[in-house]
Length: 421
Image (cartoon, rainbow, N blue to C red):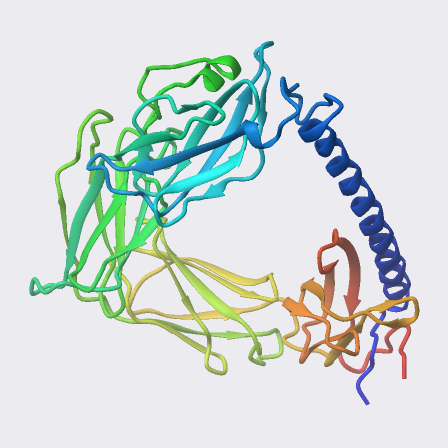
């Protein structure tokens, strides 16, 4: 019979207490939330209270609503992205007016404002506001957004044919450069035509709320001196291109040509007894292109990397978040032997979470042999062949705050602590 709890008698008690505590906190938070809602009701309707540090001038909440419609430079509605609002009062205090608001199909939004200065900020992958967006209650505004400059390019195979689904990463060419990587996203992929585009970051025009908080700075953002673009695709060697970017201009299109991969890099991964690890993975990171990383899931004790480029790779073997073995400077064509310092597998393990002595379902359990696990209707999560060692579990009820608990998993044949039948 599988142990329902292995060396976890204290944990069950702790988790039980945690669950009760979190349920109590939930009631408390609901009460606090109701109280805050009551405060907002007073602000919105009667006694002249305050919300987020902003004192209103009117008791009519509907009159304080702000409305806007976001359009691009051609007047077409922007139906992607969100808008966040801030309020600047007479004492130059700035407060958020709630979570970001998603734009509707017509590019519009309607949200509670305040009887002071309301500033709107656009969050969009390729557009930026073209001026200060200041809204007035009851006065619908048309807000114009302009396109961010873009870095565009294409990825081709050795014969010049487009490569779809190639992954491109954008990093500082010099690892010591602490400037801003200017791309709006750290990575993107090519489309079916082998092309890609990523927006470049620009500082939006200053508005009254920004001026009142951090001040307006017209200087260009401190970009990295050189940008490295790394392209990785299946069946090809990775490619790296370095470019200089002009903070005030659009860069020239990139053409990236992938090469055929080098020889395979293979090897074996075993524990001190020569046994394979049941859930291990091996990572290979290029020393010349640090943003290029590959992973391999061993078949038994054997791993293989096939789409490597030139130069040495550092290898790292992991299981259940634990580092097993490393090797530096491995080259394609070599066969590497990795020998882990941990025993590969131990007992099958079941963790049971209780609340008030009853199974507590839908509780997240992360750490050690558990990754993204949630307790079932019996309050249990299971891991097969759990690797012996000391781990920390994060136990988090749905909607509650998590708590960390240390556990020890003993090797097979070792008497464990508290077992439940």
